[in-house]
Amino acid sequence: MVNCKDVSEHYITPKSPPYFAFNIWSMESAKAVIDGSAKTGQDVILQISMKAFQRLDKEELRRFVTSYMEKRKVHAYLHLDHCRDLEQIKEAISYGWDSVMIDASDKPLEENIAMTNLVCGIAEETGTLVEAEIGQIFKTGDKGHNAESGIARIEDIKTFVKNSKAHILAAAVGTSHGLYKGLPKIHYDLIEGISEFTDIPLAIHGGTGLTDEMFLKLLSYGNVKKINISTDVKMAYRWGIMESVQKGYTDESGFDPLKVENVIHDSLEEMAVNKLRLLRKDR
Image (tube, rainbow, N blue to C red):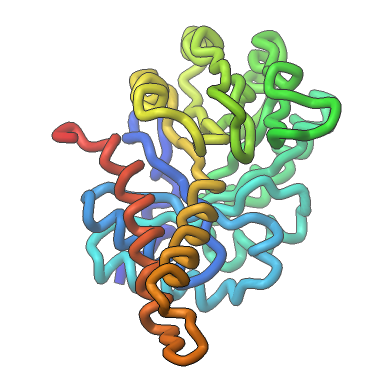
């Protein structure tokens, strides 16, 4: 059986290929994304939010992902996303998560660095990768906030990289979580500027709603190693439900849960394939 911990310490490095990271919340959603990964031959990251992490059976999910990715002959890495709770981070590490994100971006820079280093110290024993955020990546529609107001300052990034032990940096470069109204203004110059003084891998949050051209431009920067997709996963799930209703699979007289689950699975898998194909040289 593939042991994720044998490779997790090195799955994102300055020289590794880039990954798409999809938020999942169950074994079924994990299975659909891994199936999309197998169809394209691209390894994938499965992200879990704090909310989903609280309700999951962590041991069973870890066991399932390890077993199923071996069956499909791909790697699927488990990642705890945007976590502010140290106990949840410790729990994820103890259950064999491959990476965790400590989000202390709402704290002063010094506190952010200190909290990040605390998590890095905990993760070091197991080789678990640690992602941290600099600047603030807001949700679209947040009152009093927008993508521009959270943009990371190059001086703060330099200080953070110099003084923290983070393996992956989620720098706010103009994207947001949720559904965009129009297209975001991505500060590509900031991505390039970061590469001039550090080779730390970058994570781009807020991938839903970006065009293929925007994805490809992001991927053209050698330091962009992780692009997060969350809302698109939820929308694919929703479309699977809507399609099931349209096809009559939810009608009371002939309700068929197997057909409904198949449609939802295929919708999630197709969503993953459409993103992962952008990583293929023969796309």
